[in-house]
Every structure is written in C-alpha cells, then in structure tokens.
Amino acid sequence: MMYGSRSTVHMSVSKPPPPPSTSHLAIPPSSTSCPSSSSSSPSATPHTTSMPPASPVKISMQEHFAINVCPGPILPIPQISDFFPRFHDYPCTPPPPREKKILKEETFNGETGGGYRDGERRECNDGEREEALESDDDDTYLGTLEFSLLFDQENNCLHCTILKARGLKAMDSNGLADPYVKLHLLPGASKANKLRTKTLKNTLNPVWNETLVYHGITAADMTTKTLRLCVCDMDRLGRNEFIGEVRVALKKLKEGENKRYNMGLERIAQNKETNNQTVEPGALVAEEERGRILVSLCYNTEKSCLLVGIIRCAHLAAMDSNGYSDPFVKIILQPDMGKKSKYKTSVKKKTLNPEFNEEFQYEVSLDQLSKKTLEISVWDYDLGMSNDFIGGVELGINASGQRLRHWFECLKNKGKKVEYWHTLTQQGAPSSDKTD
Image 1 (cartoon, rainbow, N blue to C red):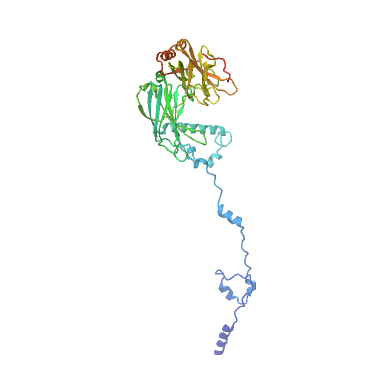
Image 2 (image 1 turned 180 degrees about the vertical axis):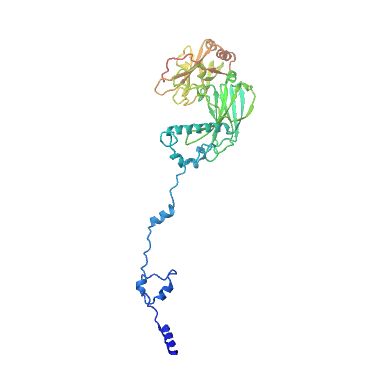
C-alpha cells in the first residue's frame, strides 16, 4: 500500500511539461481559451490545436484621412445671405421647411407638386415677398434729419445748412452706413439744381455742419419751389442706396429768417415725370428751364468805358448726353463795333452751375452807350462741332422789365457796380455757332 502510493506521487512529479511551441505564428494564450480542455487531453499536441494569426488590416493614408474628415453625408453649402444680413428679406418670416410628403402628393391630373407649375409657384412667392418688403419698409424707422434754411433776398441766395442725422437705418453688412445728403429743388431738372454734402463713413449718427447755397433764387421761386433733402448710403461696389427723405415748401420760409428743422425721414413715392424732367441733348427747352445768369454793369466815367462782369450761371439746361453741359458766355455790344465789341469767357467743363468771375471792358462814351444794346448768350461747347445755344438775354434801351431797370441803374449810378440775375430765354438765338 505504501509502495503504490509512492509510485503515484512519483509519476505526478516526474511528468515532464509539454514542450513549448517553436512556431513564430502561434498566438499567445488569451483569456478566452479554456484551461480545463487542455488539461483534460494531455495527449493532444500543440501543433495541431494552434491556429495561425490573422494578418492585420492595412489602411492607406488617404483612406485614414477620408474617414476622419468625412464621417457622414455632405451638408448643403450655406447661402450668402447667412453671412450678410442686408441680403435677407428681413424682418419677414422665413419660409416653412420643405417636407418630403409634399413631393409625393398627387394632383387631380396625376402630376406631383401640388398642381402648381414651377413658374406659377415662383410668381406667387415673389409677390408675397414684395408685399412683405413694402410693408416692412413702411413700418421701419429710418431716422431723423436736422437742418436749417435761410433765404437772402438781396443776393438771391438760399442757404441750406445740413447739421446732423440721428438713428439712421443700417444699410451695410457691418450694421452701419456711409451716409450723405443730396438736395433738389422741385419741380425742375434734377442735375441742374442738385447739391450734395460730403460722405461720412461707418456711422448711423452723422454730423455734417455743412452749408450748401442755391444761387439765383428769387422771391417768385420761393412761392413755387419745394426743397427735397434725401439721405443716401454710398456704396463703392454698387449703386448708392436710398434711406429716406424730407420735403419743405419754401413758401413757408420768411425772408431773412434762419429757420431750423428736425424732421423724420420718410419713403415718398417718386414721380419721375414731375421731379426728374429729362431733356434730350440739343432739344428745345422751355424758357423757365434754360437757366439764369448773374451780370454786373458799371460805367467808369474816368476811363469812359463800360465794365461788364459775367459772374456765374445757375440751373442751366443739360445739352450733352451725360446730363451736363460745357458752358461758356459770349457778349456783344450792338451795333457792332468790330472785334472790340465781341468777347467770350472760358469754358467750364461738365457743370450746370458754372462760376466765371470774368470782367470785360468796352470803350464807349456815355451818349453812345444809351443807344446801344448788350447781347449776352450762353453756349454749350462741342469739340469739332457746332456749339449748342442754351439761352440768352438782351440789356438796353429796347429791353423791358428787370432788364431795362438794370440798364437804367447802370447809366444813372456812374461808378457803381450793379448786379442783377436774369432769366435766359430763346431770344436772340442764332441758327448755329461755329467754333472760333
């Protein structure tokens, strides 16, 4: 008994362990392998039970980046209106989100899309959008404009001082604006009586303190004219945008009174036929639209000569295709005294309100001067072509009204310079004027 037990113990101790596997493909034992199975079958060889390891999956660098960068479907590109609020139909409500079930609905004729054609649906959406924009513009606060007006009847001038604006509507993508103010006298040609202030950058509360002057404004004009002040936003890359405007009837302004205004900007429907009277180049224009000229007369008794000063013109008619003129003035003392009786000013390019400040001298006795007539005409210069006649005026003993009064005051007040504004007319217009 004792011997048998010893032999059993000896066998369990002296049993050699299984030889280790020499294959380099053997997989190290994992936690999932069952140790009891190996112990229960000691006769099984490790070469027959071990499996070769699976080769690692190789992924290229391009696939690796593609997986990290594009984990899902490509999203739609954002619209430009998401970055620039000015392009939004703001503050109108956004359109409802599209649903897939609408595309699957069938109409009475078996077509999809709710029975509307693409053109009809687009027209409906555009119409609703325009109505929303109109209602928004009417309800939007545009800001206020502060300015003052002064009428100087002695010098026939209207002084317009643009002070400041407050709370203007934002027009740029940065929430600001680049405002300026332009002035018009209505009714009349827009470019002939257009004045504008300087532009102030990136502000909704601009302060100009700038005075603009209308020359050649008579008391009769003050009873019929209306001053229009428009606030606009300057855009270098596109068209300037209109913010709002105010209008003032000049008949309410008293002579010599410096009246101050603080008015809210409005969007007034423009009537192009009445406000902006366009004139074709070279076409005949009405008498009141030809413009005015400021002339000074002075008779010098010491030198026995007449001094004629061409100071400036205002609100001239546009004769060129660009909406402007290149004006100059010719003066002739009739009856003709030869070359000494004809003078001409310099040419002012692209303007309807030229300022000349030129003076000419006629050597003539006082007795002869009372029998003569001074013809003044304004022309538009055209290079290599016949100059266009804009308007003219005649001063002399045969004149009437204010023209005759101007001539008499010159002869009466010797040595004193007398200035008068005169309205240009068609009187004395020749058929053509060749360039000298």
